[in-house]
Length: 497
Image 1 (cartoon, rainbow, N blue to C red):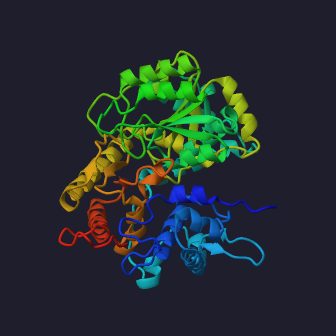
Image 2: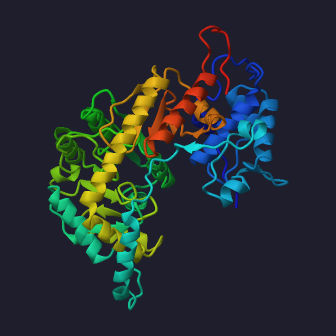
């Protein structure tokens, strides 16, 4: 079977601004050669999933021509990636993308930059590449309750692709309490919101179909759209306008111009910005869906993490008259990332179609996890109040640290969720993510949350760590940023990683 190859143009687009001002035509920047910067950029793409494992990189000649550097630079780049386990070469075939053995076999081991591996011993790191909380104390109690409830299922085969009735009833009840009458037959239990989205994309899209997305958005949502052969169509958010950040005219226009029949939106504490759509715009969104005959998949994974004091708007789907709006949810953000249980709320006809697709992928969600979630939903008011309180305190600590250490950074107002979206004074997000491990912190570059290399001036900063760790992380980021930025006393000093 032929090896899939990443095109030179595609790789160049995803690399974004991999070298900053001060490079010469041959890629030299001060005492630091361009091959190291390029290797770091490709390494980040591999860890972000934008350079998938097993695919081949462009030929040295093609990439050198597209990037406008010498072929020697590309040869040195590929050699360095091979040396550190990011490329595998076989005689007679192209070099393919891989992960170093240490990363493959120990998922908890943070990925250090190539520069750090070459020049420094192992550094203690704070990982800000994920936005997820540790499990609450009640998690042990929830699994104990699940163990007590499991005997009634042991006389069956234990594979239920729809979901345990008790859980579907509990989820439906929560929708009804929020103003959207729902029955258990409208709920399909999944292996998380991501799994639910993939099932929906397989049923509701086709290769080359357009799918509207808010921009920026959840990166794995973008990858899911691409993986089914569809094309994400970005509609920019306006972070300076809380509540009105969604460009509804832009959504309406994009739906008509691209003939998009599906949209994937995160109106409840958008990941990464933390913005929330207000009630008036939710009603307008439902009207747009009806007018354009477009189905809207609303991701409510962050919906329980409202950190404001305002009255929450009803679910977006509450405004829909028919089946234009589908919601997906998850237990991983509210309770624990290790609890891989999610759900889809839709009509019975679509659930039947989804079950036909699901049987080719998996045979259902683990019963123990479902029963544990039933218990957690029963005590969620007290549990979530405490978790929201922790997130508020951690967010305050993060914002205070940013104001002290990085006063020229601009942070978008976040009303909930788990992260803030910071605007940098210069477009160096990818470069900052590359050099940050040398300073003891792991970051995800802004372009990970968009398409076509957007958001080089932005960085997502989650506040899911303890306050002391967040303050230390910001100090480390400030140190890394200072290393990147030309000093005011010497404006000709080149940027360095």
